[in-house]
Length: 67
Image 1: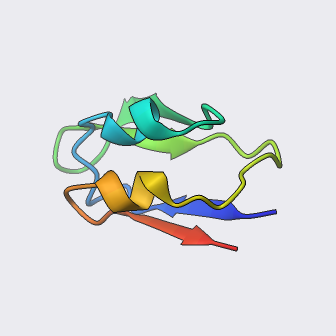
Image 2: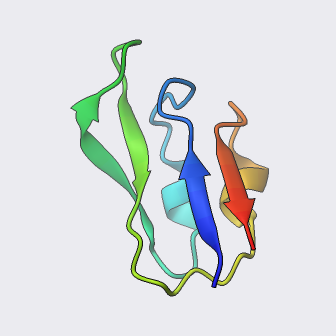
């Protein structure tokens, strides 16, 4: 299975990744990063397919997908 790494300090919480994830594995968390944004978090439940749609749509290049 694939996994996603989200750089919390780069994420601005735009939520585009949450809209595109077909497995709904990315959510906007309830903690704030050092820039004052609620950042995206990956819910690791083992069902990530590695499609990388989240990384492709991220305007801040804050997401890496590992297959």
